[in-house]
Image (cartoon, rainbow, N blue to C red):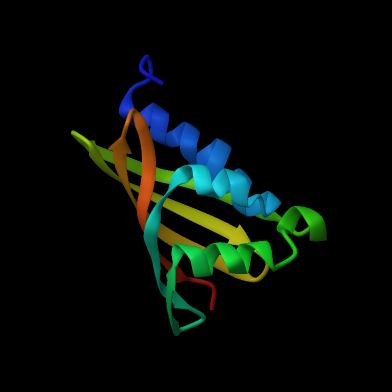
Length: 125
């Protein structure tokens, strides 16, 4: 990844690990993009949501993935802002009956950009 800009490396991680991992329900891909101990917080359908990475991955692993169900899925990167070894990506994820708007905090560790925190809200009314 050394030839890539930080923003390009983060965009690749989002496309190839984060979005693909969610769509396929692939925990191996998701574990590659998250730092152990990350938190996933926000609200879903107006209900507060707070999970450790372990709890979040357990949920992903125990549901039928959008790919398995044939459900539409769309992940879109709205912006990536990088300062030195930290970054924030603003993304949307549309799946099942959810329209998630997310802020993902990244940190560069050993040459790889990893998610350290995920904040989400479901914007579908």
